[in-house]
Image (cartoon, rainbow, N blue to C red):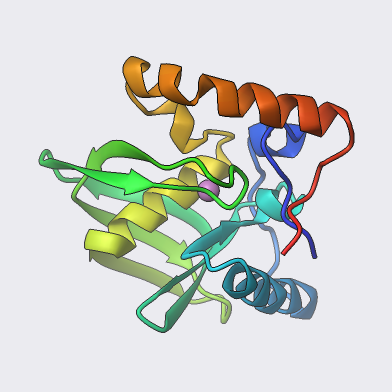
Length: 170
Ligand code: NI
């Protein structure tokens, strides 16, 4: 399993709902947890490993969550700015403003519906990964000034992608 890099078209794909939670999906989720850990991430979305389906994995303080068909039910009015990065855009870190608390709904790997309130790192990572499923990257949500500051890095990644560097090597 390999993580695709910035400019890969799957990162810009709006992913489709999972219809059935079977052994194959569970195996994929386990592999994604391994891949995320190897790359030192706190989250990894299915389309980052070239699967355009609505699921992702998170790991915060040694707790793993496997999230399938996620939805945000409520968002706090209060927002918070926090520095984000992305395994598909290595070396780029910028502040993103997001609701500080969210109420979410999803299926876990046992096909159980989970409804819970998330805050701090969980809320941050959940929103970042859910964006991925809609083809949205954190760099789409940064300020114009910050975007200008990373433009060169993005251009370089674009060139390398065109030359064949399509996957992250960890
Ligand atoms: Ni990401």
